[in-house]
Image (cartoon, rainbow, N blue to C red; front, side, top):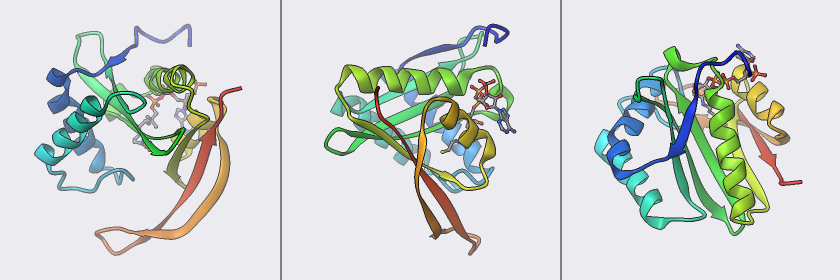
Length: 167
Ligand SMILES: CC(C)(COP(=O)(O)OP(=O)(O)OC[C@H]1O[C@@H](n2cnc3c(N)ncnc32)[C@H](O)[C@@H]1OP(=O)(O)O)[C@@H](O)C(=O)NCCC(=O)NCCS
């Protein structure tokens, strides 16, 4: 953590929506749970805009690199009263510098501030990197969804349900 370059996470603004949607489109090429290619950018921008307009406890955060370029995002919406469901993605070239941890911490701080009693997410069972990040952040496995998601290539994929509760 102390060896990481400067990592900036902040709440998204309208001007960030296009870049945030583009992070989804890029990561979708890797088999991202949150979107499959081709990603409809306009639709994704509209979904992100709706999060901004809805306001707390929903939220959208962006990760900036040192040049001020948006290289990642985290999105949260209240799926059940008091429960924030989240998704996040960082461009491949911007990973491994603490951005995932910083985005997660921002959402956890937000959960505390808005009195959420839980943050919940789903992650592919083979996404070791993300699972390690969430576990390090205090998330616990609540369940497994076996062969739950049919992807466009016809494959059936499994997820872990992971959740965190403020201490
Ligand atoms: C998951 C994701 C957001 C993590 O971003 P990141 O930039 O790697 O995050 P960080 O740099 O904060 O690293 C997270 C931790 O994972 C660890 N890690 C890195 N590569 C790893 C790997 N291959 N396997 C296991 N752990 C790994 C790091 O050591 C780090 O732990 P540390 O903070 O104790 O050093 C990013 O990889 C990503 O966007 N992936 C594609 C989309 C995705 O999977 N999103 C999550 C869907 S639920």
